[in-house]
Length: 452
Ligand code: PA5
Image (cartoon, rainbow, N blue to C red; front, side, top):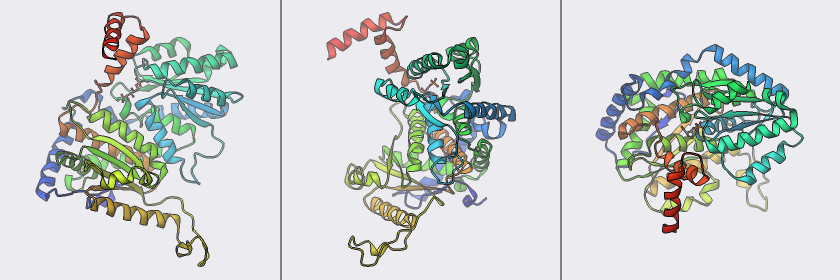
């Protein structure tokens, strides 16, 4: 199989630094072994690997339910507020920004706006949203696997009260959709008790691997995107990522090179692009990799940059600062374009660009930047996808999920848990006075007094 058949192509020719072919091949062979551990469900966190088969085993009944709910929200809402955080937010946001970025995108038209909420405990952010909802017909999609996430729960409580105030209890109920664990949790119980429509988040899929479930698919469907095509792109990538030989397998090569660069002292991976449509893909990617591999004192710190904007801020550091970085630069082969025109004697001196397209300028700028960064000691891995369509988005998601899971196994950690996230929550709930945390609260308050 030719790797060029893959929807997501990895070019590592400028990303190997001083790695030898022998080292790369040995790590690739380890990655192939870890892929077998992953698909054989014999590794750490195997109970949370349901995402592996979502592109090929999501029942049509589930997609029809999503279509039905999306159609109903489209018919009765000007704004749909999607309320969730972390894995219950970032994939949907990444996909909507990515898919909506092209002028001919199906996500434009008359579909309701999707607004995001529950991503902080900021009063000003929530007040701004509430002001925006005044006089607009809105609905709420609340997404929480656990049902106990404070940011989501508090925001949903406020939004639900507003729906009841505006529309009355019965109509409010019909304007709420919950996406939560198929069997457990407070949100599942609330939805059942109150009669909200509910879509399941499968028990064997964790938050940050959930974008190809209703968590991502419902917001995409609300905006009119083709959710079957997203799954189809993911299924194509699945076929190559799970079966291509290691040397032709982009996801395995990406996983192996990340580990090797890490072992050579690179501690930060900077995910960069020259198209703003990738901005939230970068945010999603940071959560996927950061929460999956940042454990036991290990892991690459995932950072992101939007070029050329950040060449005017982070660029100096990337070029000449602490040599702890490598970059992963993502691009699409096809995107929107426009031609620049300028008279040859234009006083701003831009005549030399007359007739060039913005895409050409962006491509040349990218090539020049990558060359400069590599000359500055920053290895650069390059990822290329075909375009900003549903198929490409599905493929990109799947590529990253496999690379992340295999890379986590190469690192010797469980890529499917997040025990470290509990530490701040324990302190927060105790300080907020959640029943049952009284003993913790006394100890924390006395530590805060002593250590401040
Ligand atoms: O990836 C994860 O598991 C987390 O980022 C969660 O998605 C996030 O903490 C939100 O959790 P929940 O969906 O339970 O509200």
